[in-house]
Length: 396
Image (cartoon, rainbow, N blue to C red):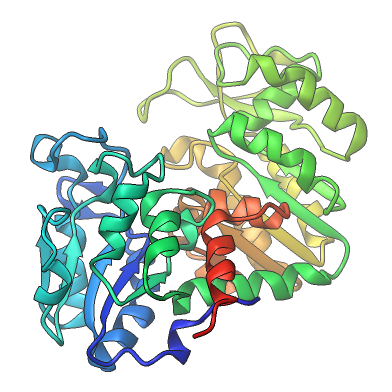
């Protein structure tokens, strides 16, 4: 790849603006999983060690764009700032009003970190606004894109800023992610399996058409599986599914080997206190919600996983956050962990499941990206990487 890499540049005394993906789950002010924060540390520490003026930026959740963070405090990066300070052992100052302050970059103290408040509250962030992009770029001498999890989005803090910054490069995490994925996907050992689940039905279902050309077998779970069950003529009751993509699912099944669940775990409501009932797929009633694959299906999938040489995993098989609907995801996670081949897993929910079921050390590579991970595996161009490659062709 032709992009510049941060670890080949001189950072001493430079204003270094690093885009990280610090979007972590927070409940009652407490961070539930800090995997993404820890993954960002090598890049941040490298910049600190070289005497750079370090400015970080990230998003958190989906706040209302243009509305002050003061009015939507649940999306503040304050818990992240506190955790970063603990992990880095230095001061981390959270800055709110930074767009109209030309001296923000210069105010960064060597040895400490400035963290810009949630970029997604800034008007024009999602639309990749040029003015906003230039405001970000004006803060730095070097822009470092290190957020693989948002590399598939052409936004001001991921793409636009890279166009206008004096120098744009890839951070250690982003470069490592791309290197690992490239190595594993260029000549994967066959047979190859993709396990794709989760609730984001439409975005992943369309992508499965591209993915099906690369893998020998597909396993689908979550809301995606419900769409395929509906396409197979089964009743899915009140379950989440994408009605307008049923035909797409049917077409995909005619082209690719996609096993359907033989049994499922259902409930009458979506609740952590809901009563779970195992049923054959032929027994699902109109008022049932399918919230997990059944034990027989989990066993069938585990046997299939055991026969694979390369496995790509993106998304849970059910609502694993609720204990009574976590069995399918747990068994599949354990099966992937036991597989002696190469396994790649990515996505926020996937990382949470890996952590919950304690299989972190048994997955070959864990990506911090969700949508970006899946799009890269499918062969899509990631806008934030493409612009780095364009800038990389310029003279250093």
